[in-house]
Image (tube, rainbow, N blue to C red):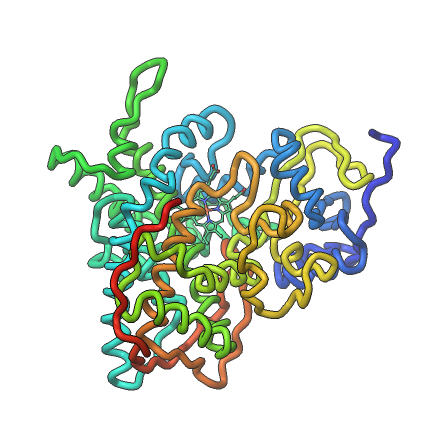
Length: 466
Ligand code: HEM
């Protein structure tokens, strides 16, 4: 393979190459790299340090799936995640990852998830009550904070049978600052080592200990009560190693539980914030979604059987994930030398796939930057080339919670959009911040007004066969 050419290199500054732009504006940098140099691009940091950007669907499929074994999650990126959540499923590699994945997979089967829709609807109702109070006073909310609150509550009740709503406010801030710490370590080329008592590190340790003690209390409560519940926490507590018969100790259970708590609420919350933003800016799409909600639900809470009858609501969320993918890019490290798109990828290099760029490539998408939920109506396998759209990643590390997230999003949108008008507060500049997840940099302030669904509540429909 050594005879193959290296990919074209994006010119950058003499000393630090494209490094500063990769920190300040990665979305702009990677978009420009693809538009000017194509499907496989080499970028330079400090002299001698290169990384590779892959944005064509066939290259993405190659890295994540077909040759996935040759591309591991890089240690440099796993280390900060481990500092927060230990060697949980997100950061684990090799056998320990496989063991965790096998253990958790059954908890995420669609059939099992069906039983969780009621809890998702209850959490959405609680959000609706809060919004009611705000609307009555003509007030505003920050969509990001609201969505974090509701998704955190859902993760708590559905995965751990624990009502996190009492802790949600106290927990939201430490989770956010801990994730910010992780995210800075993922993006900045140089940061103080974890052991150094800088203000930032001390704050991280304090916040991490709040988060850990909340999870520890949840585990201790379950062990003490001796109760058995049909939830994920129970699966973790009951797990036994096939060879040794040993169970996980409380620290291991904490790491797995915390990983799911983090992976399971931030991403969905970010996507939902963007969905409100897009809906508020596209009244026609919001109107069409409301028509669907009014005629199917007529004001009542959605149940599992309703979800298949709300295709437009689902398309709104699918299109939101295209335009604002919360997991906007994933780094991998090549183990052996490889070839992608006719170019040589040396061993031991960071290879980045980037949803943000692929999802907006003009050669793949009609009106790539426009919000057009209709493109997902009736979309199924074969509608788009594989890996033209991959908000949940792909291959062995495909998001374990994708069905969970899609259900949750439909339930939350359906509940709140039926009951409230949302208007963006004027004068805000809303820009994406591409850190750990793709979030609105300074939140999204929305003014709320109560709305009455336009049809009488319909009778709960006959169940739809899967
Ligand atoms: C819209 C919401 C979500 C998005 C966009 C999303 C996206 C992703 C992506 C792209 C990956 C692959 C990362 C990689 O390959 O490096 C991933 C992995 C993962 N996600 Fe999600 N996710 C979402 C919601 C959830 C939820 C709700 C849960 C759990 C309840 C969850 C749990 C996980 C876990 C545990 C992994 C690691 C899987 C593994 O490595 O085996 N995610 N997610």
